Image (cartoon, rainbow, N blue to C red; front, side, top):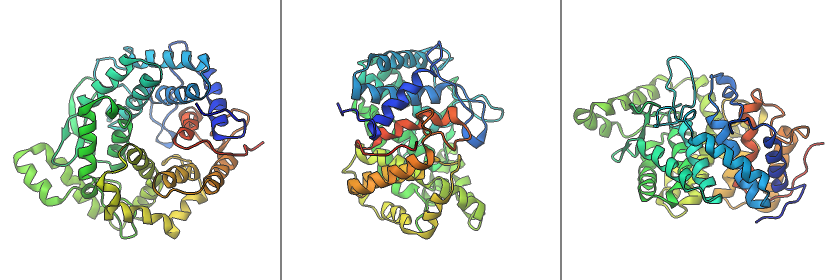
Length: 372
């Protein structure tokens, strides 16, 4: 266990978890929010998963039974019918003309939370459901990509978005310790990743995955389901000169790098980390354009650039403690709300963003000075 100190990131995590205790509802769930500026009608799955991770981390530090009790109630909610009404994938959102599973990204949160908390609280049922839901998603080994699965079990197309594929793989990092199938798929995903990421000349990743077009064309002859990936090839050319699209891609840059950080911690020796693709992607952090990410907050990306910068650097560049503490201090100054104990000062959707206090679990315990 790491010791609790009031002016450390551990201390902030614990205080945030205590605040979360008051937000938990009778059925074990939490207020769902509305996914920031996307303004979706959400179910409580993602926020409940986020709080479950936070309680698990706080319990590991303190052995406080209040966190254990809240975690068990959250697990019970995620295992119940409301979260998985058809016994397939989790019901994450309720919007017209969109899937209710919220692609791969909606499933990543409960898979991650259940597998992590299952270890902490010896809940094999949580780990088993996490594995069940993960393995429901068809995995194409040729491309190293997963397809979406609707909450009624219907197989949908490939999730075409790069950050969604990465977040899904990262969400299974803890689960891979318990399942050979999960570990093998995630490693196969990493094997193909360098050819699926498409970069601008400056190293900024494009929004969509982009497998080699020759491979997609050849596969489409035998497997019509692969044809959906041709849309990504067309999208690259359609958006090639779109400044608006590049702004979106810039906002998602740290979403991508923090997912990569999770994967690197789990598979530190994989060859992907020495690839030219990852080298160029991380070199983007040296550009003037990258520095503009810190000039304002947004709810399209993570909304916590200094914190995500620290998480990324910690995984890839072995920064000194002083540097990490400086970046955390900037996060506290701009985002920490001392009245709630959460990183919600500028959030337009505080219910959805409240669980971000759990991001401190990705770092060692660091000194910080909360804003008063």
